[in-house]
Every structure is written in C-alpha cells, then in structure tokens.
Length: 201
Image (cartoon, rainbow, N blue to C red; front, side, top):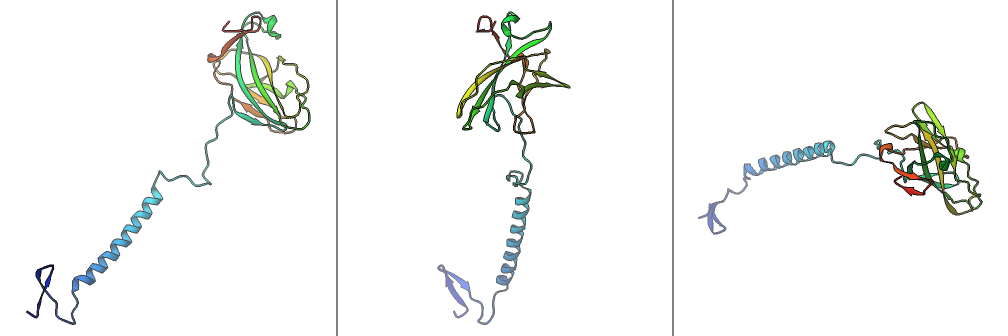
C-alpha cells in the first residue's frame, strides 16, 4: 500500500509528501522551554546552596592565642608552654605571697632567629586581669641568648584566686602593639613544689 510502510516490522502510517507532522514543532517548543526552566532552577540552587564555600572576602572567625601557639616577635618567635600552681614554703618560690593569694609560674620558650645575641628582659611580660595587671615577681636569670638559639625561661607571678587565669601579655621591644595569650582555667593547674622539685605537692 502506498500510504503505508513498515517500521520495526509493524505497519505504520506514512504522512503524505509535503506535510510535516504538527507534533514535531510542538515538541521542539516544549523542549526549549524545559531547557530554559532547568537552567533557571539550577542557577537558583547554586545561589542558595548553603554548602557552597564562602567567598574570599567573607570574614573568617579568629581564634585567640593560647598555650603552645607560636607568637611572632622582632627577634624570632616565642611560645607560652605551660602554667603551674606553686605550693610549699614561699621562701623557695622567691616571691612574696600574701595570705589568700595564688602563686603561679609560666614557662616561655624564646627562639632567637637573629644573627646576634638577645638580651632577655622580664619586663616584656605581665599578666592582665579585669581592670588590673600583675608584674613578674621572679624570673630565670639567663645570659644573653646566643644567635640562632632557643632558651626556656620561667616567670613567676602572684595573683588573686579565681576560676580563670589572667592573660599573659608580651610587649615586643621593637613593636608597639602588645600580644596577649590565654592561659586557661585555674582549676586544672598542675601543682609544683619548688622546695622539693616535685609535682603534685
């Protein structure tokens, strides 16, 4: 039959020559709208996706300095390593401890990265509490720190008792802005007896 053909083994109607099926033009329009809508939806999802990483200009949270963190200085670096509560006879502490006050010692590591000796000064450091400050009561007496060398120093303070320790402030001799380091919770301090050189009492 002239008006019939075979497709996949089954008879199928063949449109007369010169006429195009109307469904093909409608299918093209529908397909174009589907593509446009899909692109718009994807664009909105991309803009509203909360899992997308923040842009470089977005502010990032800043964590304060704490124990073990590296502090950049004019001579190299330093770090505040640990804090201990002093117990035992006050004469061995080399600081005067009024009744009700808390003696503590802070270990600081100095890294002299210069090619000349560094003269250590305990006045670079103090403790900062709410509305007040505490100067160093005693510190390690060391000779000038050799070039490209490291030395650990000990700072002792007397402060009021409390749950939270004051911050240790470092004032660089060659810079204006001080740096402050969080010392943490006073209730978790390890004790040290300088008379017996033993921890825990």
